[in-house]
Length: 338
Image (cartoon, rainbow, N blue to C red; front, side, top):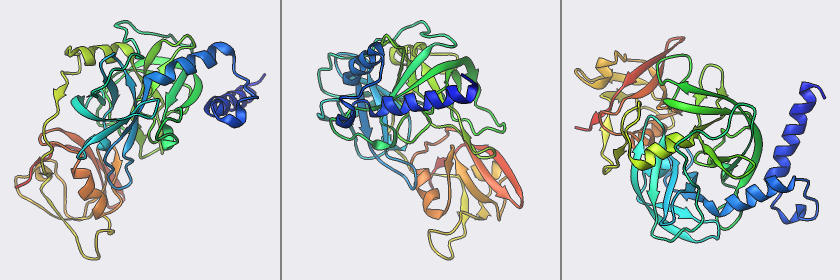
């Protein structure tokens, strides 16, 4: 079979995996039994996470249970910044979660619910899976499940194990550390935090947060490997720095005044930069148009205001502005609002 044929076969396989738990397909399953068993065995270890949304940024994600007493790993995002975070178990039971800690570099969060969770993933201190191995990605992509419905599944292979550095390059990267590139389209809204497993049910890692390239309009499909998850939950400092406990959300600002004529749906053009502010230090200028902050698209003044709610003082983020015909990238750390 040629390369094109293999891609079509893989796509069909992914579609079958996603639909395999639907009653319509109950009598027509075409999955190998060991794959079907791995999916079924993992479903009780999966959760759906619901919280706040901001502008066009979704307020939901996926998570995995990692202990018998309600510890849950998920990604980091705006959904964690609302008044409460709701976790829905595989049986449809709903629980309010406490956020124990978050890490900006690995884009991980650790949640806790007050429930006994006998089915959970074991976190390995060693890497699981190698290049060319088949993997199954389980997630609540596009919020197709919100109660006791099973999460979706997608089949792929491990393409590469590598390390990514968050720096000013042609990619707008919101991750730093080890990662596992996978040949499965997992970079979808709500999929982050989902489980990536081997056909025998071992955890390779969790689906990483969406990483966009504003120049090539492409996304990276990857998993945060299980050994990184193990270190994060254990509270060990990694080469990327130590995870910080969550603190109460505080109002922040960059020190810019935006044009407000025409309403909140106008583009976020800078009218004035406050002297001595983070914006001044980052050399932002009047008439710059803010197009993204921390990887999130800023389409108008409303998006800009909403994006500030997910930021914390003194935590550096990547901002992209349009200056004439040029796209300018700056690293900028917001300050407490005065």
